[in-house]
Image 1 (cartoon, rainbow, N blue to C red):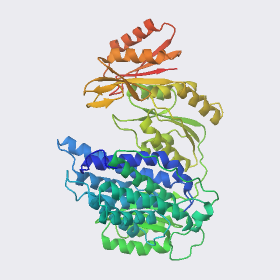
Image 2 (image 1 turned 90 degrees about the vertical axis):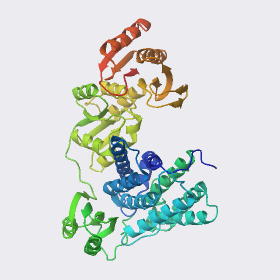
Image 3 (image 1 turned 180 degrees about the vertical axis):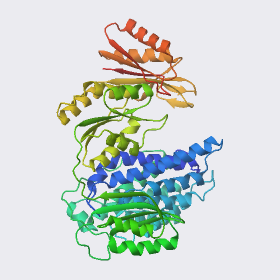
Image 4 (image 1 turned 135 degrees about the vertical axis):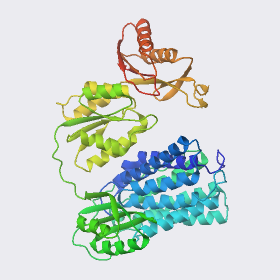
Length: 545
């Protein structure tokens, strides 16, 4: 199949692949976590890979912001470098560290291509080879049947295709197909995987990332085979290439960033190897990410301090203790000061989303912790934050908190859930009631087009007023007020008892009152609540229950 877009390499293409990978990992995160039995059956591989790519995406956005602030167009080399550095700094767990090295390998090749030059099959083959070589070099004692095997199979297939068919799509299709075959074969390559009846979780995550590359290049999102089922049996711990026998499973996962030279890393590897297993050191020049499972976390940190300066030190107890927290908390993503204050009045923790940016996993996890409760309900308030909320919830569950994410896709749905929240009810009953309230709330919003585009209701121009219902553009109007009126009629026409109007920062109080008055005149039987939300970009948000 020929790609549906020019195969010229620009910074936007790098960002598109990173964002597509993040979205795909967000969708598959829980399923990948369920596969996780090697090297430690801790059920967090999908979450760790998601967090690693999320950090890469954040670094890419910062690179775009810096370039645009200076009036320049972001360059591919700078964005590729930012992606690699972001993945390195945000890498979590075994698979996250290896994935960061894979990203670095790809970025090193893409960064050599001049902006606007053709992205060829040969370039992709070199990038995947650098990714595979880098992944193997990161692990002190590589084990086959893991993400490493999948990375090498993809690189081998890409090399072969580049020397025969040679086209960009042919090379990527060959690499993706080989990665799927290699993934399926991991089940029989490791006893832990064979006993559990699953494929390698890290390998599955890499397949998702490479699938996303093919989707971005062709412009077609293909239907993929589903992720393999959850592990059937609890698998025994398998030491990941440890050169010495250990007395029991390591108790701590230690990770840190270290500033040191290449020679210092050889010294550090020799010091850490006798302490435990799953040792990985990734990076280059002066910045390195170190990961190891050990019994003595202090000794692992001291070994690092002996050769360099440490930052971002993380020590995770591999068998989480019970949480002393009590009670139930609520965490709500908000997009304006008015709704943030309203959420706080209901006793919930508000996590602010910036304009055109969803909150990060770390920000949502911080919100969950600030709730200071053993049970927490998270309301993401938009579709983009849903996968991030799930990832944060998974992290919190590792701290022995009970967390449920209700799929609220608009602030009006979150407010509806808050209205029925009953802290005295059983957790499951409370979650069910709030979920029903979310499902029973239809939502719509008015915004201004930021660029020319083709929508499901026809072409729009930059500056046009757009009306969205349930996330889809359904109106192209002449003014915010008239478009809001059309959306009210659409929502109320399907039935409802309560209309909520959330006024944005760019919509005046008098205009909002006029929308309410129009709604009362045309729909006299419905109750109406007007909220001063203060959110940017969205002059009006509507909800009908």
